[in-house]
Image 1 (cartoon, one colour):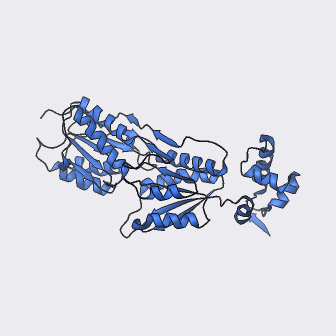
Image 2 (tube, rainbow, N blue to C red; image 1 turned 90 degrees about the horizontal axis):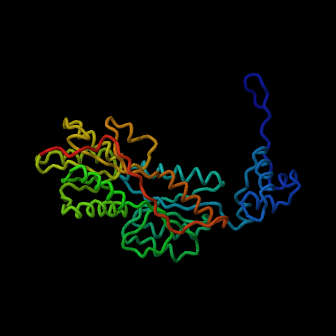
Image 3 (spheres, rainbow, N blue to C red; image 1 turned 180 degrees about the vertical axis):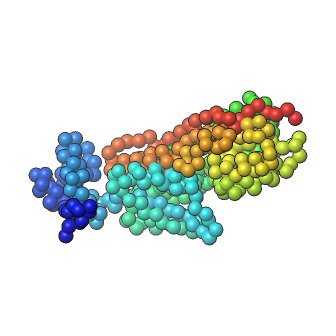
Length: 358
């Protein structure tokens, strides 16, 4: 069969199997397989020859054969809690994009298992026992997270995105220093003379939300101030929630109303800014705002009408790093630190200004 395109005849691509590939290269099938799987005993020159031939022939490893040969499934397991009314989360999508980019580079797959939010421990156990995955990944960590103790009993690598406040810190993780990020953000606002603060946060049971609130409270306590619970929200991080919470806060009497707002996401900030604009208030003058920026593809803080001051740490980059670490551990090609705590970057833009005179 031939393909026709703009008058030219194109040959149908020919796909080769491992045996044919090894014969073409004059190498054993074992050597070719080891080169593809990144084993360190295969020298660089041989690996490059194999990879060049793979690109030219369109060779794809047969997953079932690969699994028999290596004892590895070439897959990372994720459990996705789903329930009626659970909206899809742009933050998780951004993270998955990074995870996917790196997995693709190593020809790794995801096995994504939906689970009842009350049965994540059971779902993880079943996934580990299935033989379909080489490693597990968990996120949306809670305080005293019940998944950790079970994961530690498995003879399978796992990695946590985030941490679990109140749990023994003896597990592999990648997290950002949420407490420090919101402590620094609050300190900047205090230096600008602000005394009344609002916090639009993620759900209270999630570890990052607990730590961010702790960071705000620690900075305020140093100045003898406290966070008014009437000005704190713990919601899904959507623009709709940002709008509703900010509308409620702006109905407070002017002398009690916060002049500084911290948001746990630029998505929450999007709704909050809409409420501020509708109230005919000026961002950066009447009210200052700092949001956490996960570097979401479709929502850039510098493109807000008044560019947003942010604490920044890319979710996509975190996804790439987690895939790197898990695949490195499965293939045993590289050693990584077991625990990584990244510092968020504070980027000052026009949404933060001097506190208005009462």
